[in-house]
Image (cartoon, rainbow, N blue to C red; front, side, top):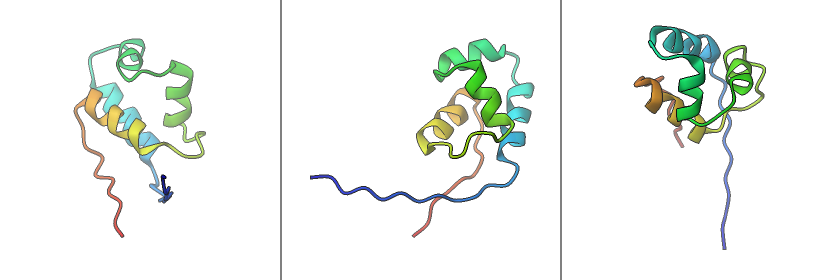
Length: 76
């Protein structure tokens, strides 16, 4: 049996920070998205903060692909 716990935290400006990390990377957005994997449309929604909630797994994959750490931590 599984027990699920969901915790949401607000991270103001995260979309902007993700955009800055992407712009600092030499690869095209299409290449970055292939490595995550996600669509470029979804990426732009994340950058513009139109996405209601970003799964931590997706954020971790973005950090891994862009070689950055946004410092997002969940504490009890």
